[in-house]
Length: 389
Image 1 (cartoon, rainbow, N blue to C red):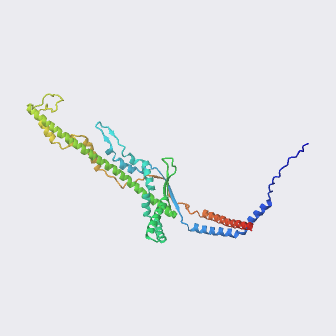
Image 2 (image 1 turned 90 degrees about the vertical axis):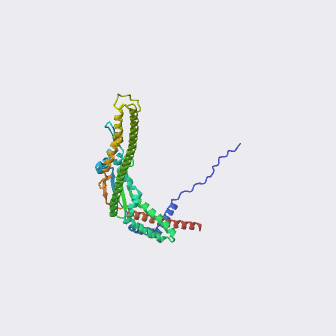
Image 3 (image 1 turned 90 degrees about the horizontal axis):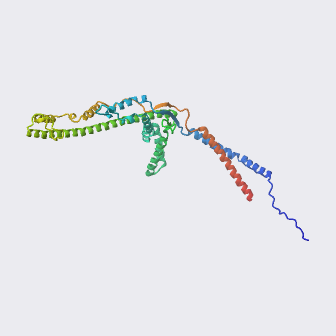
């Protein structure tokens, strides 16, 4: 009879039970270590807080003055529009049947959107910013201090020149970013623009923004009148060329008619046709039906022609336009602007930076965290040493 063996149950190792007591001991040790290192934590916190306060109080302040502008209305540039439209008849084409083909060549000069975009482009122009800053005392003081620091920090002349150029380039680039015009709604063509200028005091930011706006207005003003002058000069040159061509054509036609009449006179004399006769037909190259006497008078009349408009009537229109141009001038004493204010320039109520409260709070917290980190690192090394021993 077989003996039945009961299956043996393998003895798996039992997982160790969690001992909360040990964990409590570890946490206690951790808190005790932090408590013992409280001097280090407080010292780091105080040092960072003092440093943050000193930096916050001595850091360079920056203030921004702003304004909001938009596309101008007609009355904002009406005087300029009058200057442009006075030249409209010069560009129009007058046909023989009395109709007038109105030219649109001058329309872009008085387009409000174009004028506004010209102002924005001029405002954001690096060349205009540089020209303005080069004449500004506040910026020149920064630049002078930069040159002094560069000369102090470098030894050789080569290094001085290279570092000075690089530092100057960065200085200009940084200040260029402090002067900006940005659309409030970039998806809209008719969007207003916010213009700003940042400086070291609220008074100077207000003054500099007004001065820069005035400077840009002057640039746009001169550009607008110069564009008009260029258009007028181009049209004047075009009319003179047309006049030269038409006069040459008229002289050639006159010479051909005189020569043709002379041939007809010779033929009439040979045919003894002295008096006008019945029309011999329009296909004759040399018409002798006028008779020798009339042809002779015709030749004398043609040779005496001085006013070529008799031959080419279109010269009258060109002469009239050129004469009109002589009596018209561009008035550079007019006043107009290519934008309108939605919000006028105002002094700022608060500075952009430094944010002293944020600086002190941030660096104080960072000091405390650093102090805790130092204490914890010391605690970890000490525990490792105890285990090894």
